[in-house]
Length: 323
Image (cartoon, rainbow, N blue to C red; front, top):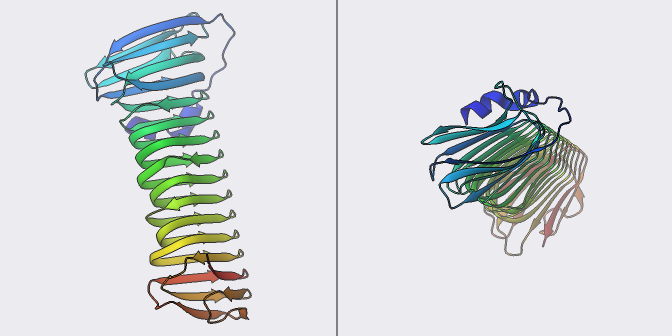
């Protein structure tokens, strides 16, 4: 997706133009397309919904806000570009479009302020919006979404997921079989489906991961982190937020918060070696070895010992709880 990466959010924002009021014009255009080719959609404002179907063609229906605008479909073979243009070839105005593409297509959508909705595409899906929301009902190999100020919602299932959100919330109910990578500036991040490997970097919003089955790498600045999973391993950090981690331990696990509390909830039968460091906070352990104690460093052996768990906090309290 080289041209979308080059455009980025700044380029997408430059697409925003004033839209004069004119009577809407209906459109219904078709173009042959490869069953597994690439469809590129570019538009300014309005809304766009893209749906996969069984035909080897692209159909565009909907309305254009300016009588002089037109839907242009360029290309053939493996790549087809769809855009709204004026009569002189410049950028078109607002449009409300329904676009049907071959289900196996690789789809790339760039919009200014237009909401983007995608469903039924089994190839890769990549969407960039400057200020509109992005909603993807995924059944795809890979999903990538970049939103400057709108929310991002991902449903369904995908192999891998990459999301960048500047100020809108990120909500993922999709099952991500391999890896999910999310960068969020100020909105909350909710990963509510099952996820393999997790990489999350959040500046000010809370992070919630409901069911991780692989390695986790989570960094939050001021938001709290709630993580649930099986065979947990990796690192979870927050500068000022609380950490609540629930699940079994499957490898080396590090939990760190400067000013927040850290709570680790483990099932009965857990075997682990836990190192706790807290400067001024207290330690409560359901597994013995320092229950209710106060001090900088503690070592807790759970069961027969096993994977290494390191917990550190400067001023927060630490709890090791049995579920």
